[in-house]
Length: 267
Length: 147
Image 1 (cartoon, each protein chain N blue to C red):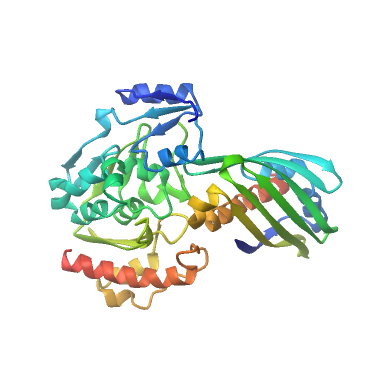
Image 2: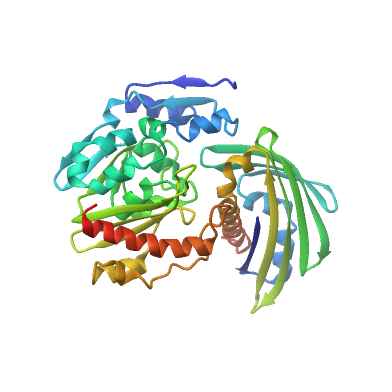
């Protein structure tokens, strides 16, 4: 075991000051990516600042047409929340399909977004609903948040505090998952809201992205058939031992159509 | 992992060639590179930290320039040890051709990653390589055009 300092502050202010004092310290949310990396000795930060005891980062509430979820809210809490089920059932179902039960009981919304794994589920929902990410410093639109492979608009010393999801008329998330890791090989989140349609794809590229050609078609007719012929080009898509870029490109069209059908069926 | 690509470098061929052979320039442009030290005419010691998501691994290795054909082409071979994280080795062929006062750089690279990194990160290796290449050329183009 490699020695490191462990802090568990009770307030956000205290956490930020600890991170400011030690630039190499890493904030710890649910620890479902960082702790395995530490165990494998693939990371060795001198200190961890555990955000798990900070009450102000938790909770789910609906106000003025948005669903606000605290950054440290666990996947299992989102999956079983009445407020989420009533307002954006697709989000509850997405949370219920992340990883396995152990991951869902510890992993958090803010941790998943800050980590920005290319195959994570939450980035698709945040982008597919046009959510706003609030940090201790500012509010960041979903479209500006995901910038690359494990990279986000967050700056050092910046912590996500909550995420506000606008309530859509209908939405759905469908993923074609890897049976072992349950990560998305391709996952598509679609939503139809006040005059806008969003289609966000995860698992297929360096980070989640919007399929704008599909959005345009769906805006004039929200049916699976409308996008049956829209192909996302395979250039720049991921190719690994699980799926080639061409296969992922093919899957995006198939899964997006299923997502539209699921949204229409209210499932 | 195999990767090919092309970039338009906004300077003449001779200047692009000089920059590609300047350890200072390479150090500043290779993401996470801490030092490049020339140990002989065509050999360099390299120290770099690869930071990808939760992972942070320091690599120490050697870079060798072979088949140098100034100012048109060279082959870079590299081999690095990342301690417990694993190793990386590979080769990149780089070719420069003049194009309207600028330079067209074409590259093809092959790399193998082994050890724990490869075990847990196999789904990410192509993406990481793509992102490293993008960042390198962004920084390189800014640097040579004096930006």
